[in-house]
Amino acid sequence: MALPSSLSTAKQFTLSKISGLSKRQKIATACLAVGATGLMLTNPKRDAYLDYYAETVNEKIVENCDKIHPRLDLRAFIFRMPAKDVCEKAASGSLNLVDQAARSQYDKRTKRTSLLLFSIYTTEDIFGSKKTKTLGIARQFISFSRG
Image (cartoon, rainbow, N blue to C red; front, side):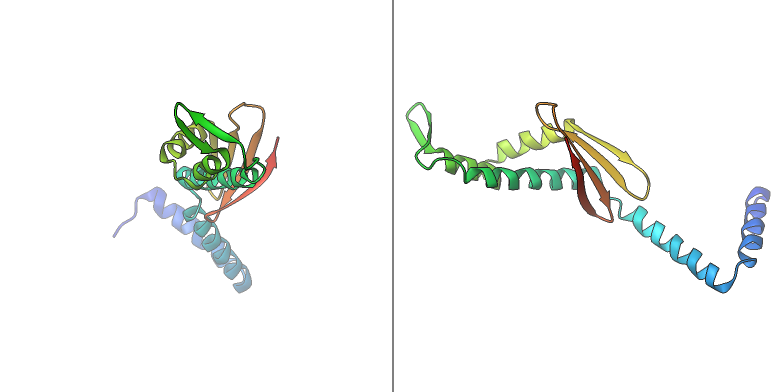
């Protein structure tokens, strides 16, 4: 199989550069190439980030649900429900409509910067006053700033 001239030239150039490396350098280069390929393949997608962010927000809501006074009720017409129960159901995703609406808002307020090996997600809160920056790498997320 004949290679086009530019591809053949690139192959010869690469082989000449690699042949000048020591065995240790070749192994290190191969490890770096495999590692970089692994990071590229596991760079988390936007949907995975939105799931992570929704889970993080729900955890914060649950923490704050405990602060609601047990005697506080929400009333709508003839229905009455303890506010703490409404809060916990919203946080657990039992109120699916709220969950979908929240996810839609997160999506609108999120900017993804993909840097091939990893991504940086910036999400504004609903008031636009605080931003959360999160590093997405190897299918994991690390929130590193807020404010």
